Length: 445
Image 1 (cartoon, rainbow, N blue to C red):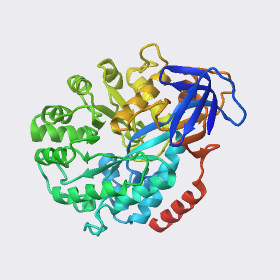
Image 2: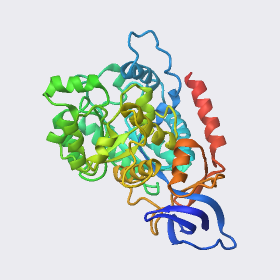
Image 3: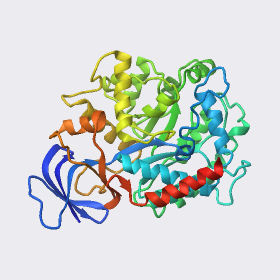
Image 4: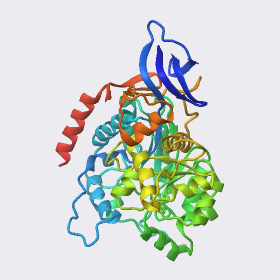
């Protein structure tokens, strides 16, 4: 199959009149400045598919259901977490497969073509292991196969309720493992991914409050290669508890005590000081920012401009999946910085527009964090292509990205590994996926 685009964002910049020839799951050839030929499938604007570097797919089932105070004195992340625990207590593997398929279909419809699934719902309802320890992970992998999204699976090690090895709470029983149990679970995750094209297996120490220093060292020995993702410094109470436990802030403790390098993704890292920002940049780690969820939970704002000034990188994720929209994640990232600094175009760098700067960092940082072998529209790379509808107002170049992110414009088609998975803005299997999702929610309600 050959696709022809009025314009395309290639690794070297924007090009006009672009033919992209698909060879199986990959891009076989690219021509620029050429007319469409008979048989070419014609579209408007081609972008590389974006990586979604942080998702908890099962939380899609509670989207919009935690927006009432619920009688608590202070409604925040910690009260939201209790609502999430109540959902967790009822989910079966079939439920997770149905909910994850809905989330993954929506991701593809919004321009995400790879997802980093930070997967910590492992065990049966009573906390006991399934006969197949990675049964829940297999449900996530099945949703990936059904929808076509590329999957980086990050099985999460979760052992404690707080810093210093505090005993876990009853609501966490479906997450908690010891090291031996987790090693078996991760091995099962590898089996679950065997038939998925382009799948990557990483590891996810949940957070410094859920993993002791000794356990973190053992986890890194268990997975000497591949992505390493960790929640860190998302909430001020977490920072305060880490200071009380260790005398150091969470990010500083991690940089001082773990071999943080480019395979790491520090998810959220919301509450950092200038020294920690500089340390992250020196390490080469990616910061995983999830602006919609961080706003929904009242987390705070990461100093993204300071990270870019220090030479660091970031990617974006949909996290709780309360709303799945790649453009909105990018827009809210910039708008949060504008509100904090009371100025415009805070994250624009190197002569690029704000939209282009955001997109480039999300593409490259996300691919790095998810262990993707390459990113962008180039020969030999997986054919992960997003087609925007033609711009009716004549925008071109970076203005196309700016209009998509900040103003208007939608996604027409998406190819993942050369397979058309979104047509006219809808996933090709949306009707069946949505029907199963609705039935699952009815049973859970």
